[in-house]
Image (cartoon, rainbow over all chains, first blue to last red; front, side, top):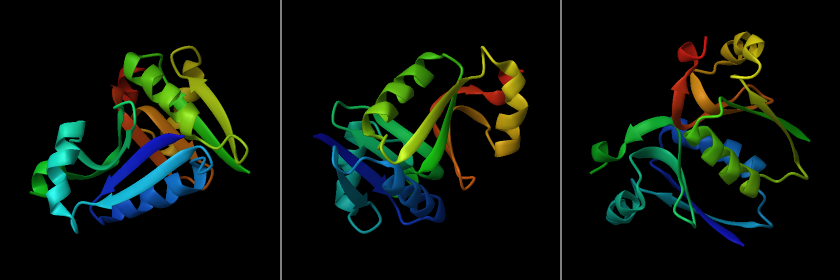
Length: 78
Length: 78
């Protein structure tokens, strides 16, 4: 099972990317967690440590960060 | 079946994103085509028409374009 964490901030680009990903990710193989950084700002530090620069982004369990389009810079959420 | 087209140009960021996506995309539900724009530059026009601005990117069949990280601008491939 691959662990994947989708970070977003509720922005239109974020919501759109989330909908797209949910339809193509293999949920049998991927344990997908969705984190709304606007609602849980205490997790911004963890996101930054993972290498996030903007949202929406998907972090995979081996440390890969996939920034998907551009909704907002992480620094704008702080 | 969802059709998805992954456009890349063989760059390190592209190869990395492709490997990541192949592991999380549901291949039972998604018909994934991979197009190397460096090797098939005649497809750059089609990619631009789809809304691609950079590679790597994934285009879904309802027209959504997911730019994933940044390897190269499409204009740099022309």
